[in-house]
Image 1 (cartoon, rainbow over the protein chains, first blue to last red):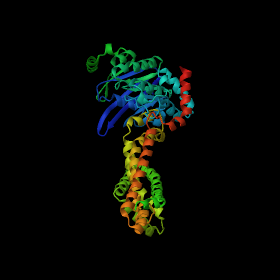
Image 2: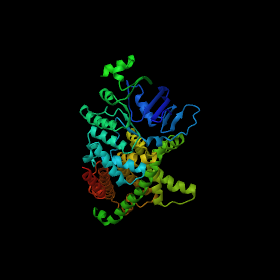
Image 3: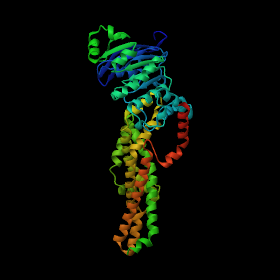
Image 4: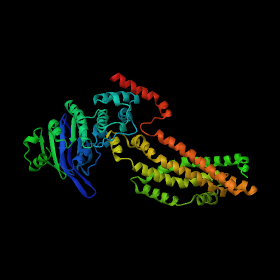
Length: 252
Length: 240
């Protein structure tokens, strides 16, 4: 663990699918209140890195350090207590490219039912919380609607509200706007912008380079399973890595 | 001639009722056992997968007639316990249809997008809770039409239990026929009874299907969820 304001650290994360190694030893720190953007070409491993942060992908070796506990298989010789994935996941929220709303629950129940079952509060208290979260993303009038009745942008906003209802310390976004029609992207980015301004620690994998430039204060460029270049908020202007400049140039 | 059907309507309907009773009992048992075998087939442990595969592959291939004779006569000799014809019928049907339902459940559960499970995990829900609240309801929705048509097959399979003396439709028809020798009339009636029950089962299962659409609009659904919907409406009004 480094400084006390580091929310999550990845140390030497290696991951293989079958015999193919897709992450070759990733080191990454995310500080409290920061907005980290991970970008790069397809197959670079950026989604895998993100999904390692809430242990949806279990690394083959390496350590995840979160809130003073270590998770994952570890570097050899680690003495700290190793935590259970479910404890990590209850403190970290994730928003998926495909939204993954539960189709058999209304918008408000998508928030309330998981909240009630995980925290143990009553369903009606959970629904009250659900109403508050829906109001924050501007969807309260659609509380009783089902996902099939909502547009993609609305569904993603409900998904964000659902993740936020657990009061996470860290929010992960896996290409949140990639599956949206262009005219719906803006409403989701507005919600994310407001979240960033409120001080939430966020890690975002995205192709929306303008948005990344706007909110990112740590930029990470990955290619072929390695972190190739990193930078702060001025990364896009001051970047001196050839490959990263090439990629940014082709996108922006 | 045709008056025979009316005269013996009581016995014929009773026979149909017996067929339905045996098949409904077997339905509940085989749905439960089928689900267990489906989960075993999807397990991480090769042992469970193996047992499930063997069971399903064997019992899918056995005809109901063979199964019921095997259970009624064969098991009694082996276990020294006499089953009633009713029990033997239920067991025979359950053995076969657990195998079918296992495959129906397995394909229904595997048809669910894996993002559903990932979303549950990302929210910190336990595996059991994810299965209960997220996966199983969606799996049932996919499986119910198939279960309905399988059940009609089960009712028809009870016709073979005439050979062990179960007093279902075919047996009753045989008995009447042995007195009056009017097979065309009597077996037409038998066939119509099966057709009638098939229509009824189909209607009932279509009812189940429409209950599980999202959003559901049935009268029963609206009645059962009135408190929940009122509460949600209150919350919307209060916070607007």
